[in-house]
Picture 1 (cartoon, rainbow, N blue to C red):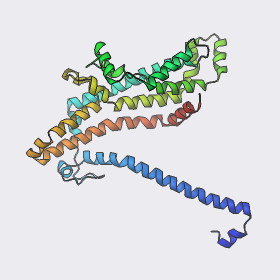
Picture 2: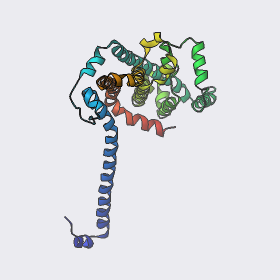
Picture 3: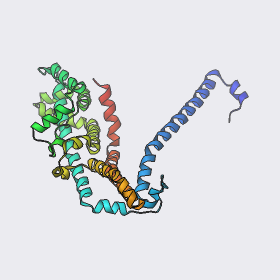
Picture 4: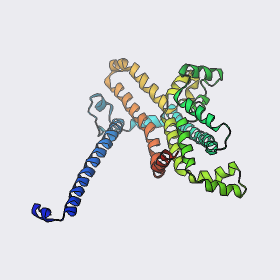
Length: 310
């Protein structure tokens, strides 16, 4: 440990270096504390939901559950896994997310790639139209009327096609493509490759980071989306196409509407309903969280490169 007298007798540059090093360590500790605090703020709600899903109904009614289960009980998970509507909704949501992600990333690549050609006729006008739709839209009511005229209401197509592409993601993909050296494209064209082959052989192999990142964006958006299903799947015959988020919304809504009746019948029934709600929330949250670690190594690279180019 360096004393005060030794510090004063040190050369000026060395003393300044030690002071800066101490300030750097203090700054690192402050940043680590802030990150830890933010991490706890994100984890505490999930821990509470997990604890509530594994607790007894009586403990929930008495508000005894915080982040540790009280009266361990897995009946809620058994109910969710053995109830047809929950299992069907989870399976359909997984299939829907996969279909929408593949379709969206394909359309994003097909839209962004031609815009990298400087000699594309009307390229500036197309870019303007794309950006215009990002800032201005017709609104919800015309959108609903359009889907009604197309016959997509109360069908799975209403969840697939209307939001199958994002202008923001197209811009990120286009910016990433701009970062690919023109010499690689020119070399492929000299070898006789056409635009499609250049895309498949040159651009796509170099674009795995941004493709993985945008795939994660699309997958999370579709898995967590329920507003479009809430608006477009109104009739009872469309219930098989309810995604898990819409089913969870209806479960909570029906539980709230019948809370007075449950209170009259006894707090136990109300507690059972809450444990099922929490178990459904866990089933709706955990699958998409498990996808992130597989794409984490691409995530930062994809966003960074797509942001600084263009």
